Length: 397
Ligand code: TYD
Image 1 (tube, protein in one colour):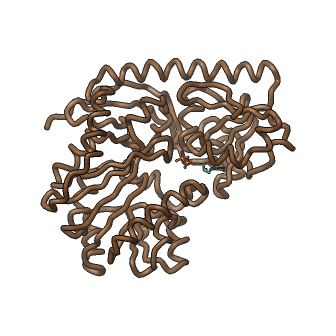
Image 2: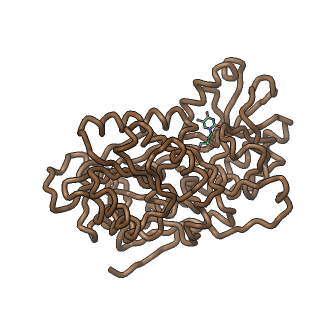
């Protein structure tokens, strides 16, 4: 099939999202790239144009930890409990991070793949079977020799980070039992467009999948989606249940229902993407005007959650350390560093009231519920938040 890529959104020059700056490197030139989003009219895949190698992005300095959010831990625990009911013999996770998912299982039952060795060490120490390697057919063959075929392959927010999808799915076919399930979770393109969350695009998110595009990519490898669960996590994700085509599990009605929603919204049509780009430009102007107003009125604004997503927003909208005093973040590896590109200091979590904060920019808007629960005191005292989705505004609850 011929590839026909059409660029529809330019998010400007961006640094690598998870490359938080150390104090000693603050004046060093950062590596930047043009963040352009494109649509492939043939296979309906939405992707970023300029990509980096996995080694550039996922190495032994990777700061992200899945377990830092209670919401995420709870979410993965629930899935693990459901999987346990099916009594699988072996479960493999691609992108096991700090073990947030596999830690819910008996050590003997799981295999974790985590190329960021600083994160992989956490589960290795706990005696989990983990490989500090990138997922590939070669690795699948190596694991097959040692462990035989697996019943479940799970991957959360990882497959969309790997450029060569053909290699990913080749590996799946090698190690997955013919009756086994491949379950993946990734941000939903439909929700991203509906909520104007353009910050889902950054160097690590090479693809934002729709059912339409993912099913095309899987079909080439005799794999198909037989069930979809629409999830609230990360601002709207899909959990795709995938099987080998030769395994005749009945197609669940959720598949056609989701497909219908995507087609109705226009995910098949280029025009939908150009309309999204127009909304993103409007969103930028509105957000910037909110920040400029805060500055004009000498308000103290801080950021909450120095997310990879907020790197896209801040750099695209040119919101820097003159507009946000500092970010707070519970991730140890981000603390005492600076946000990429915009150089806003990141501090460890602190009390919003004692710090006399007027406005909090929600970098981790996808955990709004969890954060609002935690910050009841700040909210009761009239504390306000700045959020960019579905459109930029100031909210107080
Ligand atoms: P997340 O939205 O998962 O990811 P990404 O970086 O991929 O965009 O990151 C959430 C960040 O927010 C993470 O750095 C931890 C931080 N955080 C807090 O500091 N406090 C909180 O209460 C929560 C829920 C998250």
